[in-house]
Length: 207
Image 1 (cartoon, one colour):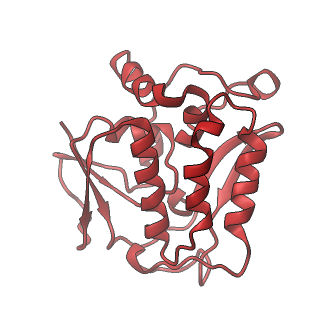
Image 2 (cartoon, rainbow, N blue to C red; image 1 turned 30 degrees about the vertical axis):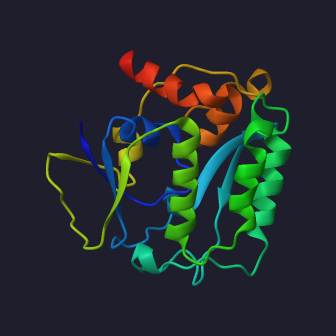
Image 3 (tube, helix red, strand yellow; image 1 turned 120 degrees about the vertical axis):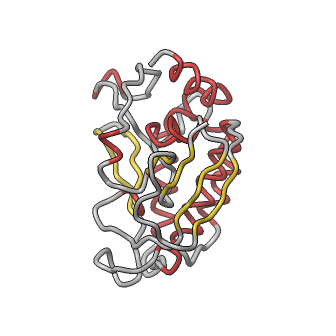
């Protein structure tokens, strides 16, 4: 099984899960610097009018050069309430939304101070719901190059390098906007329910 080194990402997308599904252990880098214009504080879902990007506001904004362990979430605006309102608005008619609604809502109701803490909570929640078994470990010293034995998911370029062409699955607004690939795993989970993790694994075999 491959070794994985990754950034902390909120509600990661299908490409990310396609990589970590094959790993026994995933190392999350607490020492890397936050990079703006990446998925470290953003995740994407699809609504009636197209793609929706949900961003987590940060203390000192997005231009900071701070280790991920020290990046703090700004609560000057009600971002959790706004995110949850968007999620419920988009997915309340999805086949399995009610199945996950209450446990997911708890994440949006708890106040997190650290971005890494919030992101990890979302990963652990999705990991549990999808039935993945990889172990979570932390890297506290930054290493730029882990060598060929590791798949490095920290680079913004990894989104393109590791892109997979997953087949379409049921999406609420596909008839209106077309199928939207590589959204947050939330999208697949609300459509496929407990089968979501198996769906990813089955489609990895077909790649």
